[in-house]
Image 1 (spheres, rainbow over the protein chains, first blue to last red):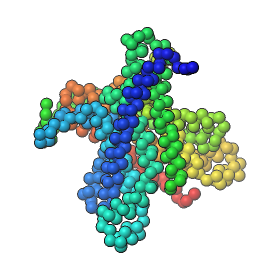
Image 2 (cartoon, chains in turn yellow, brown):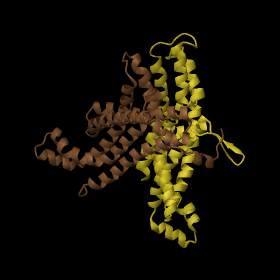
Image 3 (cartoon, rainbow over the protein chains, first blue to last red):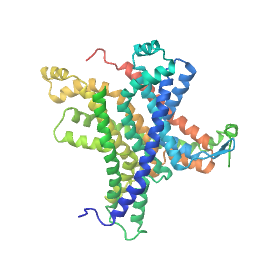
Image 4 (cartoon, rainbow over the protein chains, first blue to last red):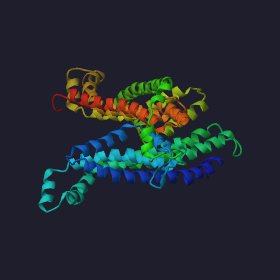
Length: 231
Length: 229
């Protein structure tokens, strides 16, 4: 027996088939970019070279300080322009993914800086004594140890990015919230068959809340568990 | 329309902003109004609910836990739309400002509950016991011992939440609340002055956010507890 009303089935299927994969794909892109760029920047900022440190600091403070939506809108508004013969213009999906990545990489960079600096000096000295240069020392000794300390905040970041993909709704990307809103407009205007009952809004947007909760809650739990285990 | 980066820099012209000063000033006030209510509201919620969580008051503790987990594990934009479309169906006809402050207060309150809970729980039990030994009632102990010490511990993280509350007002553009991001979007749509508009918008947000971050560092130094607990 299906406890959900008949009119809701196609709506739920549409959101799960069209919206949720887009949300997860965007989150995967943004998290990957954030972690790679963030760890590189967070490691580079530990080098005592003032211009480089100032530049990375500016990157971190700007993209962390701005509301993500403002960053996303700016990228989305950018006119097309040429670099050589290449025309560069980002669509809504790419704009949102890039905006999230800028914010996420700034978050990771700040966390990675703390984690890299928390590795004791002796580790640097021991690695140097083994003949490692700066790159090899960080690549094989320091960063792998820092990664362990970074794991809990990275899971937290994943949760944040999954939730923040909903910001792409504002510029019309077909992610979970946008597909739900579309369906809500359809059933409340009655264009797609008979008008749904008054409680449709709670069922549809409640469904979106439930989807995000089902993804985020276990991850939040995992982050808490890792924090207790690893620190 | 194609631009090279050099052309963009050459064409950078802020004078048009002056023509929109009234709109931007109203938008700034709208942002600050929603943020102010949101900050005060989430402070009150965080204080009361944080105390409930820290003292594990039966039933209320579980209810507050459910509220915090629900809000923290769902996107604030979905919560905003849920309220915006949902409240009228329940018979509450409200303006966008009401939805605006309500949504960000509910969100900020959940995060602030965690800040204050952590702060109150960081106060060692022996300090509370000392309060009881002096004949204080549980409420008096909370007000005179747990709150001054735990509140100080919670202050930096709670200001971080207020910064997030302020940044989240930008999402209210989705329901047409005429705050900074909403008005900036409209101005950009009319003028196509993308870089100038973004520069102004970014400058306003970063000034507020960076000032509050500086305030956190200042308070952390000023309010540091004189000795280890």
